[in-house]
Amino acid sequence: MFLHASNASKDHDAIIIRSPDTDVAVLGITLNHAIPAKLYLDIGSKNQRRLLNLGEIASSLGEMRAGALLGFHAFTGCDAVSSFYGKDACGCDKCVNQMEESDFSDDGGQESDEEEEAL
Image (tube, rainbow, N blue to C red; front, side, top):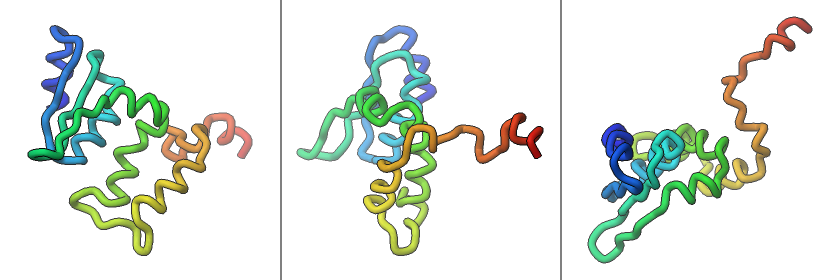
């Protein structure tokens, strides 16, 4: 779906994806930076449909949080995985919102070369 959106962005300034699934919204927010067109999601069903600007959502979260959103969603209640025992997504979300951007390091917990040399 997002591969098609990326390809369509070569010829169009805005892309609208139609899906009732919140997993698609999470993917769209996470992948928004990789698609040069404005990305919208038409989400919901029947009279409950809304048009979400995924670029604005990604910008409001910040680059690091938007990038971490996919993993966060998988652990806190996507369609296929149960949430943390005793914690719902809202409780985990409060924790994430208290974190600084630097806490979303993309090094996967790996020590830097400088840290290795210090050891």
